Image (cartoon, rainbow, N blue to C red; front, side):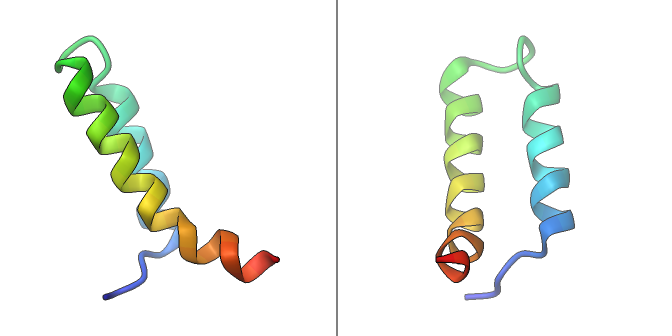
Length: 47
């Protein structure tokens, strides 16, 4: 699995936040959960 770059994660986050109010809450939550999965490799490298 390819690790996303921090810039890609930031762009994804901004895109999801931009969709608040335009898409159903379930889709927003799903998008945020996908971002959490992308962040995990960075979180675990820090510890």
